[in-house]
Image (cartoon, rainbow, N blue to C red; front, side, top):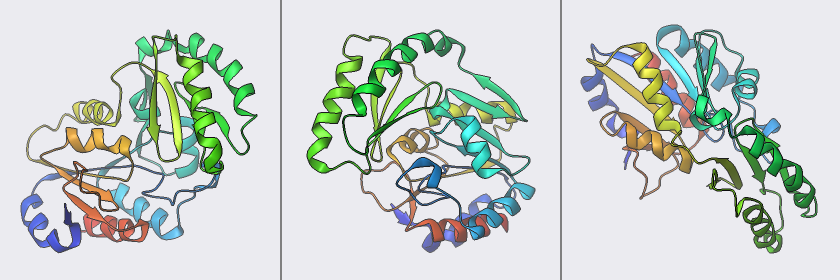
Length: 253
């Protein structure tokens, strides 16, 4: 994994004359990780950089949040979005959801009813209903209580063959067992953009869930926020401030 700014001159040479697309995560990428989801807010510099980038290149945010939530947080015109790790996509202000996943929503709602009550017994843990996904947040949970919380979550989906367990940064998720992820979301969006040749795609993310996007875009320009040796990303930046710097550089390609 290479430091993207050290390679920037080479990247300029490689992408000159190509159609540019930019995809990026929100939490931990555009905004710092916060104790609670509603507290994760972009800096004014990040917002300005993103707003200017959208005016020049097709740009989409690929998030684990719901479409409704991420749109409200960003509130920038002419952007596309993927929410719930690919289970829903907003393109040209039209929301498209995974049809096969909708049939599982009643089962997910049933799990939520009992899960919320049990999770309340673990201090500072809480359940977020994102529509297609239930997220159990444990960033503020005492370390000694984490195994108990995990046991609670796993118990609630033990016999639910259509629901799967996944991990993010200080969050566990219960979601339909279907192959929707950030990689499939980008595949869908790029197919709708109808630009298969002479393109350069940038993807910036920080989480394990971004690895699906990094893997899908193996031949493109993938950047991880924070260096990680086992990541499939080609490049890295150190923090959100460097994300802003990178967006400004991409804007001037």
